[in-house]
Length: 86
Image 1: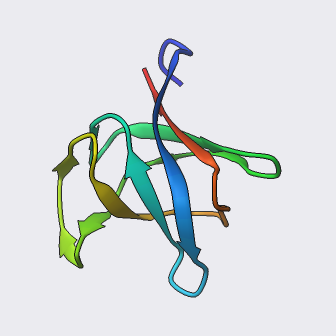
Image 2: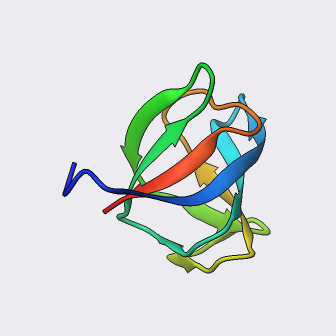
């Protein structure tokens, strides 16, 4: 963890368990390599962003207002919040 500050970047709207992908509606930009925290009622873990897609196309950076497919290392749930670790 860098400075310990968190910036909310989005919210999980769907989770595909078989492939380990969360659909995240973004409120802020996100890039490959960013360290994130996903947190909710029963979810709490950190990971590095290693794979993001829009419409099944790999992307390196996404901007606010977009919905992305984000590869996650643990199960997430609808309404879990995604934070970028600053």
